[in-house]
Each structure stands twice: as structure tokens, then as C-alpha cells.
Amino acid sequence: MSGEGSTPIVEIDRLRFTYPGIDGHPPPGSKPLIDEFSLSINAGDRCLLVGSNGAGKTTILKILGGKHMVEPEMVRIMGRSAFHDTGLTSSGDLCYLGGEWRRDVAFAGFDVPIQMDISAEKMISGVPNVDPVRIEKLIKVLDIDLSWRMHRASDGQRRRVQICMGLLKPFKVLLLDEITVDLDVLARANLLAFLRQDCEERGAAIIYATHIFDGLDDWPSHVIYVAHGRLQLALPLEKVRETSKLSLMRTVESWLRKERDEDRRVRKERKAKGLPEYDEKIEGTRVTGDPARKVVQAVNNGWAAGRLHSTMAGEENFAFSSNRVLRQ
Ligand SMILES: Nc1ncnc2c1ncn2[C@@H]1O[C@H](COP(=O)(O)OP(=O)(O)OP(=O)(O)O)[C@@H](O)[C@H]1O
Image 1 (cartoon, protein in one colour):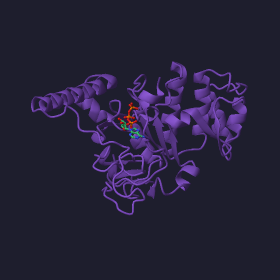
Image 2: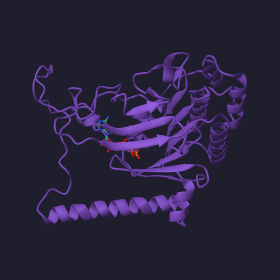
Image 3: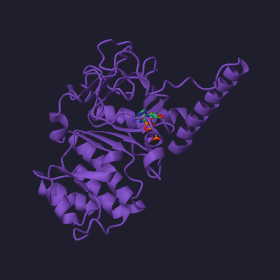
Image 4: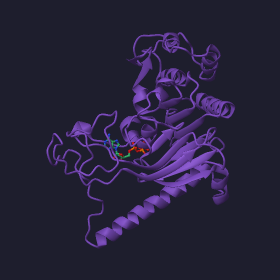
């Protein structure tokens, strides 16, 4: 969403990604989950990332957050490779708050469970080198009682402490994967207002994936719509409004409805032709060629090994979209 003359803070150029199979490589013949995805985001943009369950939002955010490896030129954050340049995340310039982060939180350099017997104060003060004014502001915005014991706190209270810790460093690019689920209406509204102000004052950029549209009608500067791992739309909010008189939620709902109807139509056509309704899924556990990869039969379709657990065989390792797994 780059305007003329401005340098994008996030640049995605023909991004392509496939989750690895059991042998750490993309299953041979598999179709990329994310494909031909190009987008530029400027400092100060607040982008809402929308799409149906399984569209690829979490995967895209994780790639941008440097959690999955892709070719360095496919994703540039402040001109640097998100995966290869670890200084981006360690400095706090690039910050990802999402699924895994909901369970554990980096505390004083270690990953500690968020439910251990420790006070909110200790958790928050364990983050080194942060501006005391920012700490105070976040504690106020999230209405945190520093005496909360994390193992006895409610889900929402715990979440507030997590969010506070995640936002202590003044990020330049913030990737949010639905983190407000447990927050009450007031905490969510205050957080959204804080993020908006933070973006405007410091010229930071936010990409926020969510299905919860309460209080979001005026929040984003841009809306990004993803379906089946492909970019469908990336528009400034006012352009979205020009195309639809509906609320943002109803507008997105209409996009998703259209997408679903189109999917159903395609499946029906395939069925009528005697073809399987769904594309054949390539078994993630299938290994072809030499397991040591001296003989490689698979074509590397843009993927390269990343910081993730590979998909393993077995029922307990079924891969679902992040919502289905984490948002019970
Ligand atoms: N670790 C994994 N290994 C293999 N495939 C995966 C893995 N994680 C996700 N997927 C696949 O990627 C697809 C996209 O998942 P992703 O979590 O990115 O979707 P999403 O748009 O964030 O969905 P939701 O709205 O439900 O959170 C899923 O349908 C799933 O099949």
C-alpha cells in the first residue's frame, strides 16, 4: 500500500510457501499454501488482515515475523530479511504476538509458562531496557494490577499482562494474530486506541489478523483480504467504503460468502465431471528419494527449512488452521 515516493516498511515480493513434511522438505508435488503474494506496507499503516478459517493469515504473519524461512528477497522488513536478520526481532523493531506466544512468554530471556506463580509486576519488570513512561502507559491502558499472581489470574488478566509485555518495546512493525479474544470490551477498546495512537505518533506499522470486528470500523487504514493463500484485495479503508455501504464486518462477510459460493460452485462442477471435489492433498509424511537427500526427487517450490515443528504423522499432529487449534 505504498504511496508514491515513500519507502515501504514491509515488502512482500511474490511470496511462496509450503509447510514441510516429516522429512523437513515440502511434500513432493504439493501446491504452495501461499503463492504469488506481493504487497507493500508503509510506516503508519494499520492493516486489518481478513480471510476465512484456513486462508493462510497466521502463516503469512509468521513468515513476516521471521518464524518460517523463505527466500530473503521474498520478505523484507525495513529492508532486511525477517528470518535471516535476527536483530530485527531481538531489538523489538519487529514484534509478533500470536498463537504460541499466548501460552508462553519470553521472560528475562527465557520462555516461562505464563501460568507460573509469579506476580504481574515481576513479569513486566523482567523485560530489560524499556522506557518507564511506556511501561506506565501500558499498565494504565490495560488496567493491570501489578499484584496479580499469574497462576491465579483470569484468562483475560493473564492476557493483559502478556500483551503489555509484548508491547513494551516500541516496535516498528507489529504483527498481531488475534490476541484480544479474552479481553473485555473496555480493555479491547483501550488497546485498539493505544495501538492507533502509537502508530500515528511513531510511524510504526501494524498488521492485525482478526475475526472480531467490534470497534474496528474506523480503526484500520487498510484492509487486506486473503483467500486460499492468495491476496484478493489490499485497499485503503476509504476505498472499501466506496465499494460498500455496509459496515466493515458485513462487507467482509459478503466477501467470504462470495468466496464460499464460488468454492461450492467449483466443487459441484468437478463432481459433475467425475473428478474429486477437493484437490488431492499431498501426504505430508511421504518421503521420496534418498531420505538423506543425496538424491532429491522433490522440487523445492520456494520453501526452505524454518523455525517450526514439522508436521509429523499421527492423529495428535493433525494440522489445522490456528483458530481451530487454539481458539477453543
Ligand atoms: N504446521 C502446519 N503444517 C502443515 N499445514 C499447516 C500447518 N499450519 C497450518 N497449516 C495449513 O495451512 C492452512 C492455513 O492455516 P493458517 O493458520 O495460516 O490459516 P488462518 O487464515 O490463520 O486461519 P484461522 O482464521 O483459522 O486462524 C490451514 O488450512 C492448514 O491446513
